[in-house]
Image (cartoon, rainbow, N blue to C red; front, side, top):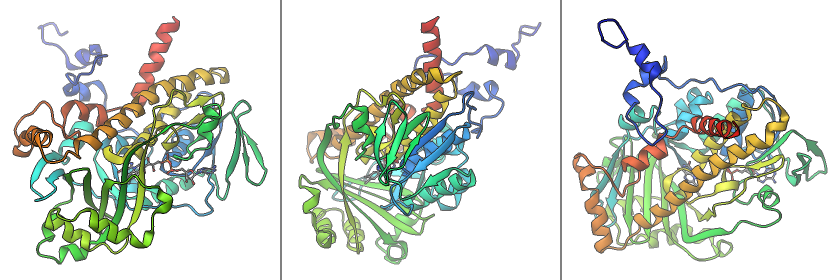
Length: 470
Ligand SMILES: Cc1cc2nc3c(=O)[nH]c(=O)nc-3n(C[C@H](O)[C@H](O)[C@H](O)COP(=O)(O)OP(=O)(O)OC[C@H]3O[C@@H](n4cnc5c(N)ncnc54)[C@H](O)[C@@H]3O)c2cc1C
């Protein structure tokens, strides 16, 4: 406090503590509290560098390898496929994920490939009428200090691979892990070679072998809500050259048509070069019975009677891949001795919040942060337990939010659909609102989803643990 009674900003700022309850009342003060509001690429360095064996070079495994190596651990990645790559088309990289990826130094690697959509527009299935609207630019960048991107999966994957290569992280391809010994911290490959580390991190996807080891030989109960998705891309020039369709490319945007049990999400990827579509529909059949030769016709049949603009675009699709949509159940364990699972292995979810890979990226940063706190290898179990508790809650809630969207988006026309659409009118008109069934717009969900700081959550959990011990 200055003598004339006027407070000095810096003193006031140092005295401020971020509240422990969910609140944004101190957002205005952030520039005073931290010298630079930009995302620092500096990851906390580990005091005890570990030898870590990481299984799986999907989006989650690669991001985790980078986070762990950046904090000073020796990481070796084991990937079963002989050639690295990603299947599928577009993927959304929401602000919580870009913030984490930037922290890992990925910004320059991603920049050439990303598109930054300005809005997410919900549309009525039959007419395309705008019924919900979230402004991403500039709102998300300003509020969450990180942009919201869309990108081709292959580009995201190769950006991560490039970073891995630049960091000289060892990656072994064609290296299928057949068995795990969680007590010894070892893995054995299909060719019989065994590797021992201080810690084994398994990011081996939804069909994880490691998960069974963690769960004591039991398989997780899958939740099959009865949906499948077609994924397809259309040449952007064919859309641009059609006078009825070209409006959709005028500004980069996500558009989502929602109707009875179905929806279609569209956006451009490849920095605007390809038009990406995800078409979700009810399907209770066994994927082994699916005939890929019939996929394009089957897909078109699912959306007969929908908005003529949309069906015209669907008509341009020449090939498509059909994907079963499965959610994992919330596990009560991600860790067994020196083995930890993360990514889809631990928390596969419906893609309806566009957060599956984002959760895996957060996992990676959180694990690195938690491991950086230990002063000796004896604290490994404590560190993994803190990571597990924090991440199980976050990912479990994201699984829940994703399942909720499968209901919110899919009402048949009737009173619930009308009430939902009425609740989104303020955001369409640009009026103030306190709640919305559009989870991108709903203020409370937004803050929880996109404002989440995975490292801060770990710091707070360690702090709480420390206070408990005292
Ligand atoms: C239709 C659809 C749309 C989606 N959209 C989005 C979105 O917009 N945004 C988003 O964030 N997420 C999205 N997701 C989710 C996202 O794709 C996944 O959550 C994410 O790719 C999971 O990454 P992962 O690394 O955990 O697993 P995976 O990508 O499955 O990687 C696992 C890796 O482990 C390897 N592996 C497996 N077993 C072994 C073994 N025994 N030995 C060695 N290697 C092994 C595999 O070969 C693979 O490379 C979507 C998913 C779907 C289906």
